[in-house]
Length: 322
Ligand code: UDP
Image (cartoon, rainbow, N blue to C red; front, side, top):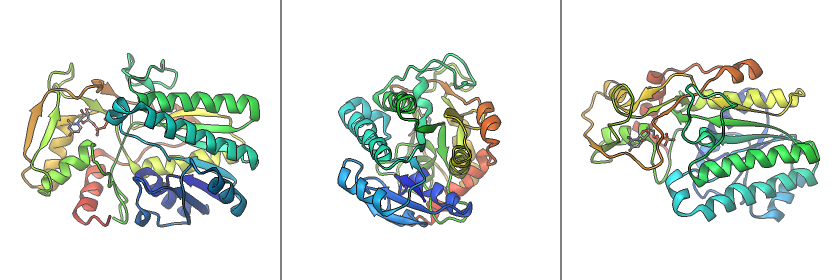
């Protein structure tokens, strides 16, 4: 049985489907603060918060947990600048509660949901995992610190970990069962698609003077199902005796904001009003993963193209269920 914290969230809920497809049983723990109960389509569900040590112990007593996939965290960069205490409390203190419960119950394998935000504003593209870690916001710091905590827990207590550093997760289940539903929504692709549907008056393009081909930021967009499958590969790797490691999960291909917008226009075939505005504070010009290490260690590589990412997202947004 695999414990999935934050399994009601965007990447967590897609990972539940991949786990089930691979034959794993799962139990989700989620406080439903941002997640959706309706997104948990597989496995058991426990409505609880990682701050609740009693509920956590009860869960470990009830289910024979073999390993943990830890998604539960706050993930808004802008909010983390305004309320760092919120990010450090949830992403670090509550994460420690989880690690301590694992210690108490003899569970020694964890897949951790990290982020390319650990690199800050990188000086090498594509970014290798060995790149210096200098996060530029409390969200990225919280991910970096937790990776370091995991390293200490391995030395002291033998807990093995794989930290997965996501680049830009996007897209939806190709069968349309689940998709991206954030409140508030801050991500480019869902905002463009919601604008196409008339749910928003316009999309703002943040920054057109970056030192990139068309002046807008470059990001490495990766399909959420590719990410989900990488978690299953990382889990199999740890369960078969793999060593702790940190891996980038991206496609190695960057796309500018304008390119994403144009792809969306082609797929939606609807007018999408947009306005060019100044840059969003804290946005580095370019983030693209080197994916060599994940391919080598997990034998994993992404399959979905940007067009497929946007098409699956568009399908979800037109028929959104939650
Ligand atoms: N972006 C934009 N308008 C928006 C939201 C995002 O131009 O309304 C840009 C943002 O500046 C970044 C890219 O789109 O360059 C991806 O942003 P997103 O918030 O989706 O992901 P992030 O890179 O912040 O994780």
